[in-house]
Structures are given as C-alpha cells and as structure tokens.
Image (cartoon, rainbow, N blue to C red; front, side, top):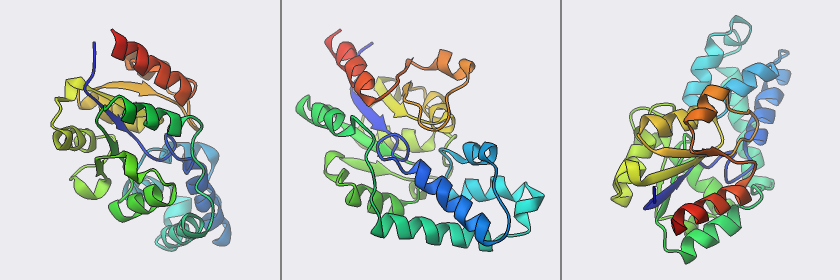
Length: 220
C-alpha cells in the first residue's frame, strides 16, 4: 500500500543520542555511589524523561537517590549536547535528501521535550528537513501512547493509515501501531521482540535498507 507521509523518531533513529543518554545515567549514578544496570537502561530507550523517572522510581536502590539522580543526568546530558558532537546515524542524510527530492512530507515525532528536541535538531543540522516537529511537550501522553504520531499526522493533514513511521525502539513502534500506522523498525540498542517484529512492516538493519524499502513502496 502506498503512503503519503513519513514520520521519524529522533533519538536512536536519526541521531546517535541513545548512547549519550545511557552514559549520562551511568555517570549520574556513579557520582551518587550507585549504578544502573544495562537491562534497566534498555527499558528507558524511547521513553520521555518523565517516563524514565517514573520507571527508575520503581527500583528501591535508585528511588532513594531521587531527585539528585535526575538532576545530574540532565546536567551530564545537556553538557554533551551543547559542547560535544551529536553523531548522525548512518544513512539519515541520504534518506532525508531522497524524501525532499520526492516531495514526500515528513515530520519528527519524538518523546523528547520540545526545547531539547529543537536543540538536538539544530545542532545536528537536521531541522531544515522537517515541516513539523511534535514532541512530548505537545501532547498529553508520550510514547508508547499514540498521541505524538497522531498529532504529527494531523499537522501534515495526512490520514494515519497513509503514514509510515520509522522507529528504533519498542516503545516508539508501539506508539506507531497504536496510531494505526505502519512502522519500519531500525533497531539501535535493543532488538524488537519477535511479536513486535511480526507487526512491523519490516525490520531493517540500517537506514540505507529502510530507504530502499520506502523507494520500493513508492514505485508500487
């Protein structure tokens, strides 16, 4: 089935910031004399900052360090974003150039809060590619709820069923499916479970493969 718009996640899909975020949590925990396990960090992928805090609050060994842990995490993360490199995921520029050449509307749907999302897009020089950016600040419920992607489709004036979402995380893919959209998963840190992979339009190894698939669907 053809499509009329592409909606893209940001962290872990277009820019390689999930690793930066995970390291910021490790550094914050270390400074407080504790640690966050890798399995726990994997569960944070694709969640908004507030959802991350709620999840970590459920762990007694970490909840005792709130809100200092949250504050230190933000400090480490923002320092890296403002002064360090924001690496792009391989293939994203070629994909966005192709979407522009084909005049395919596209928007960002991110669980990151609005000001931080804008900072990332500006510093990574990806902002000019997008007509709209919908963030966690724009909706009542962030991913895995469908609100972000439904809002992005509405801004583009495209029916949800005519959108394809590119996502790296399980939470993000769940949001796309809940919005009645097709989703292509390009895994970053965590591979999708088999049940999620079956529901996806495809699971692509990288953005080059995702672009090839979109081109095939465009030619149908």
